[in-house]
Image (tube, rainbow, N blue to C red; front, side, top):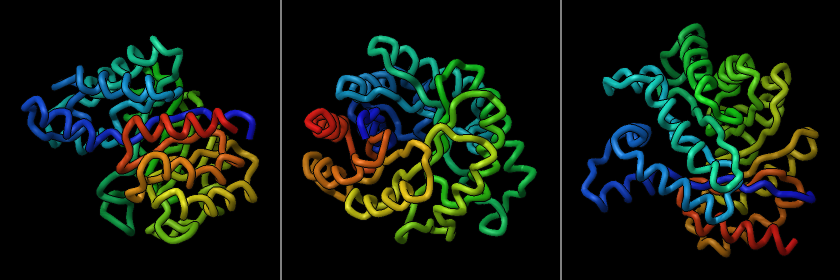
Length: 270
């Protein structure tokens, strides 16, 4: 792969730590968009300084049921989250990705959310969020191919480029049993700009999954694994075999900007 576009890394735990350091209460991470926007911007700028070329908005768990439970406005959370990311990215020539995850109360039969409810939630999220000016939409950490299909169908209606990643728990299957083949088949009607893996496990276990992706699709691939407690330099070295097949690389749980710096160093040496 000639060019690796660098993504960002973990945000939730880092924002909680940053908030604690200045005496701000621990709250749902997306609430910091309005409660402590300076922290959200500071973290985005730290990743941008480390080399990130696409910054995810701080909206991963900002869905209608969660936001309503906190007595907040979904539009306000998405507008401020996207605005913070865009402002930070503008000084680096970077792009912003409107970030959404799966619904916590999973789609039937794994949970109690009906398909119609699921579709309505993602329709509201994607339409409201797309109007805020992000460059693309990323759907990440999905474990159910059906929920991802529903979310992707609503995201595709916005006309924004679409990135989709799932979290795998055993080889190339998710916790709910969805396979790479099922994921690719579910997404085919929506022409995603890139697909792949995030969260899941560490880079060592992620490499064969990405190699399987490469055998099954010509779409650009995304790799954003957990650190598995590896230090940043070891993490980057463990990712190196996958850099032959992926177009987008970053990190997930356990990471910080130093992990992006090390991936950048490795990609530049290649």
